[in-house]
Length: 447
Image (cartoon, rainbow, N blue to C red):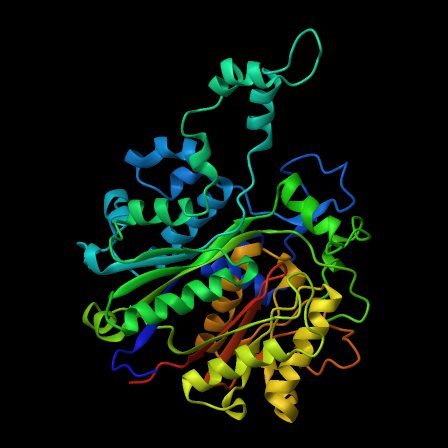
């Protein structure tokens, strides 16, 4: 990509079932702490899959200014996760945004121009709050027939929902609340491409800064699959493990020869990307440098992966070409690995096509054995994992990767962390329903 502007990563904000904040997440990843357990957010008794990755308890008031707390009423669970990640990312980057200044958490005056501060945030299909909706629907039941009445709903039922109720469930509300809270006025976009959303959002932010349209961008994605409707969809498509309710810690087995499906989860991550000169001027800590962004599309089916892995390979090779490196220069990778067999087979084949024999010489880490699949937030968590592994020169162990598919040659550390010894890292994400695939390359920062 022709550009004189270098783009670096200066902040990480995470909300995952194994920890909120980059440090908590990293420590739990190294310690192989599992965040998958029986669902507590609602009674899962009517579902075949009764386990999920659920965030630790939190109060949204800890992440927004006092003057904004009334807006919590029009935030969905997905939006709250994004707001948490944004606060963590800005704080981790020592970026004195409007939110941190108002909360008294900024270490000095504002150090970012709002007009040069942008956002790209990935979102999923935000599910309605069922208790809230059901309560209102119940008031529209005809007393004589005992059936739902459209006439009564129009006259009375709708009045039991706040007039702004629909605003909670629009996908762009994640970016809306984040940009308002942190006063990010530069280009802002929402990307809704399933599990690929975060990678595409980070890639777009990378381009936005590189071409000079912003100096700083907050980017990534978030989603909650902890909702009966959100879990019902993958159950109907046979993508969730329904036989592991009694042993959640081993339910999600990425690339496993005995894998039986993935685990629904919630969470996400937002990262701060920054023009290098802007970061230097404010004395920012730099995690790594953005090097390449590539994408591809599975044209064989919207609901089934290509078993040859051709589209996966295309996204990987496109990212490598954009970074100006070859596969042999990559020593650290973060595959997507959901535990859904058909997708794992396709991904494994894609990595082999792109890397050949070199695949056995890299270090690989996969996260979903501990946290499940987080929808639009999954890619950002994996990207942050790659950033932290490269920054700390450490490859965390990968849970539930002790028995891989016959053709899978991905080399995971299964028991303890190992030295990364890598200059470049490559991470991948793809949509489980849809065709989008994206890959990102990062490199160690050097003057």
